[in-house]
Image (cartoon, rainbow, N blue to C red):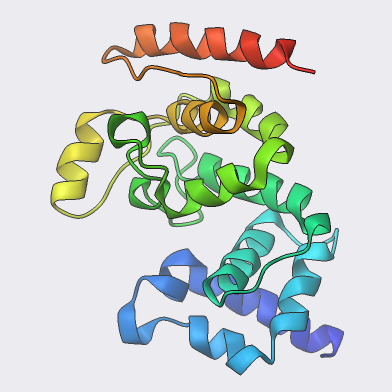
Length: 200
C-alpha cells in the first residue's frame, strides 16, 4: 500500500471513530476498512509508525483485534500507551474527543468487569503499568450510555482514576476496594500508588 493510501486509511479510521467502526450495526465501517484483510499490513504499519497519533494507533489496534489478529510483542508498549490515552480521552473533563463511553471500560470493581477495552489493557500486562499510574490522578468523570448500563454505571460516579486503579490492581495483584465516597477511594488509590512504586 502506498503512503498516500495508508494516509487515507488513517483519516478514515479517525473519521469513523470507535463508534463508527463497531457500534452502528450494519452501518459500521469495520468491514469496509478491513477490506477482507487487505488492509492488515497497513493497519500494523500505523501502529508501528512513530508519526501516527495515539488515536489512530488505538483504532487500528482495535480493528485488528476485532478481526482476530494477534499483534506482535513489539507492539505491546505502544498499544499500552494508546489504550491508556483512550481511557483518559473518555472523560467528560477531556470532552470525550474519541467518542467512547464507560460501557466499553466495564463496571470495574463493582461487578469485577473490566469491559472490552479494559481486558486489552490488563492483557498487555506490566508494559501498561506506567501509563496507568499516570492516570491515577485523573479525576475526569466517565459517563455510561444506554438504559440499565447508564443507571448502574453513572450511579457509581466512576472517574478515569477508578478505572486505572482497577486495571492496575488486576495486573499487579493488589486489591483496591471501590469505596462509595470519592475521598475514601482516593485514599485507596494512594495506597496503590505507593505499593506499585515499591515494585521492582
